[in-house]
Amino acid sequence: MPGRYRKTEANEAWAMIVQFLDRVAQGAFPSNRVVWRLDSVMAADYDFTKNVRMA
Image (cartoon, rainbow, N blue to C red; front, top):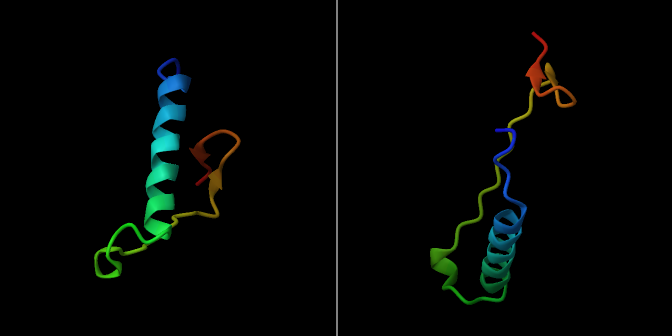
């Protein structure tokens, strides 16, 4: 939503995410408790420059 982006908070949250992922990658959690799942949804009919579906 325009006008609601909070750069300071977003940067702090990103830093926390990166720290957590670093801890996971370094083995801070038992391997039987860590599950990596990366999903991506993309559509050929989406115009990322305008944030609208072209269909």
